[in-house]
Length: 156
Image 1 (cartoon, rainbow, N blue to C red):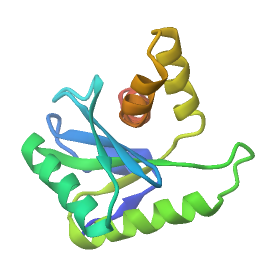
Image 2: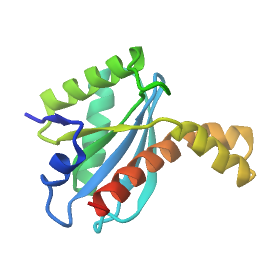
Image 3: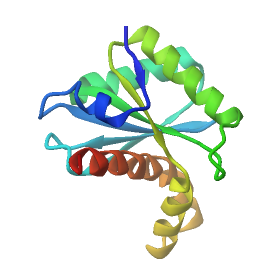
């Protein structure tokens, strides 16, 4: 079915100009989802999926993808600060493999170092309450992940 990429130029070559992408921030309890516009210039927060079982999580993700005409996924890849891969990277690769088994949508693994910290900083600067930050942090991190990939694709 689908395929997982770490090379952004190979990933970019798969799409026509107006196909939209999702950005995903994969956590143990939630999946933050962001969507780009049809010009692939701007990423926006969409939803936070509360994780239950993979099948239910994937079903919700595919439902959202179908509703928004999404053609590919940019999945945050939690590389350690020293560039090594830890247990979260293994879990992320497994999630991508499972998505690939169920969907033809290609998945790009995108270095997400410090995106959650950046999202937290942005929310604190916006004077968001602790409760509000907890509600939106994952989809904001997904937005930062997707925007980084979009910016890189545009610069190519």
